[in-house]
Length: 447
Image 1 (tube, rainbow, N blue to C red):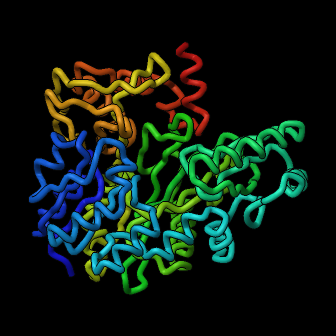
Image 2 (spheres, one colour):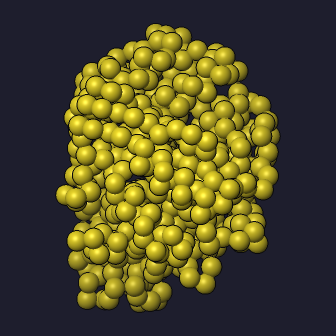
Image 3 (cartoon, helix red, strand yellow):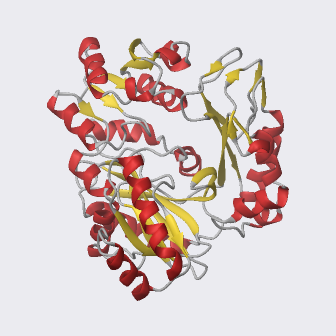
């Protein structure tokens, strides 16, 4: 058990965790950089501690400063949110050594699932379908060429320690392999201080489907259906929905059971996602596991009537899962509202919010840390709000989303609001017949 939670994060997720902690009767501590002193998570927490200068490496990523803030304030638990230190095994370990409960998986679980080649091997042994490819890292160019010939082009080279599209190269034919292999290793080393790469068969035009899982300390693991995250730009998700338009009850059950097998193989505790690629024949393949809460968790909350952050905290307290999964009800879609200019290649648009109005009404939720006159700093992720809608079915959710996006007003900066409205006019999106290449072709058509 614990009584005071330090939230080692910023923005909307910090505020989201603070709200649930207060509902559970827990005291909260916000940490903030000098650039975030006027942020809402600082205002609404019971206590707040400045942990350093503007840049993340000097503040939100500085483990000694965060541990010191917890010790000074008497916080006996830390919630990492997502991003920053959420999947840092060393941080989880240091929390334990400091007698502070890390609200997330153990260091071993994070390490095992964070190394993508090791995670793939674990899943394979658990009977979870995996994409054909190397059994582990591919250290040498010639080994890579041989592997690519065996599994057949196209192949994809991926950073073993990475994510977000860094250290990743698609190779369509052998003549391109050497340059792609060397580039991926250099990029992986620069991004993750680890140049290891592995090779997989490239699944053309797949859907990106993730299964939400929750495990407790008693060996129970449950799944709360799937989220479709196929609308993404450069491997960054922009629109997510639950349930997926292409997943039927039988496929949901098979993917859910596979995800549970994979999670049980590592005695998983806490919230997490098992991510799959689904091809046009509805074959599914394990891609990676995320050992944290996801940005898009609200769509699952809406269709399964579950507070995932509450469940995460209760499990960390040693309690059994409170809200067991049932059949999904209705349809939910999340739109990431970013401070970006879609007309100019989504370049960041920091600055002062001159005017702000959030949409409302039945089935509309906004998770955000912004307010009128708030100045968006240029140093962090551009996500400023998440619009989540629920409808009786997908068509109803889309109509509600259009109405809510039209109500959503942010003046003084550029945002992705109008971009989302344009996506909602696209026939491929409306029909549900799209894949991970959808946004690339959508943007080409718009220009």
